Length: 134
Image (cartoon, rainbow, N blue to C red; front, side):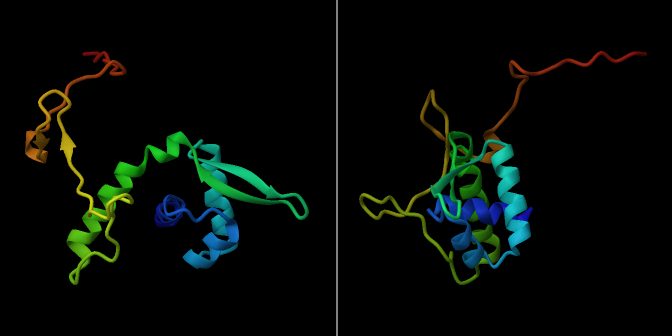
């Protein structure tokens, strides 16, 4: 749902604490709690206490959560293309040199940037063949 994507966006930007997420997103507390709990259950986010009394936690992406980055960047680029007539609201840049980043699918063998019409598919190791009874 949209709240989960917005929470993930904020976590990627470095927003870590419940109050900061609540303030930035304008989401109801019960919805934020529910979405964060679900992300923790799925192993996408981890809850880490930073204060004992009262107990307060911050939320950090796990390796599983960090692996969502390319998908979120792709969604962001899509929104920039189709819904940002005056230009993207945020430009992703390389921290070290401030160069705007590009997103591409690259073939690991020939290093060619691949366009959508050049992508095929085949069964992978987890593919299960279902028997069809006639």
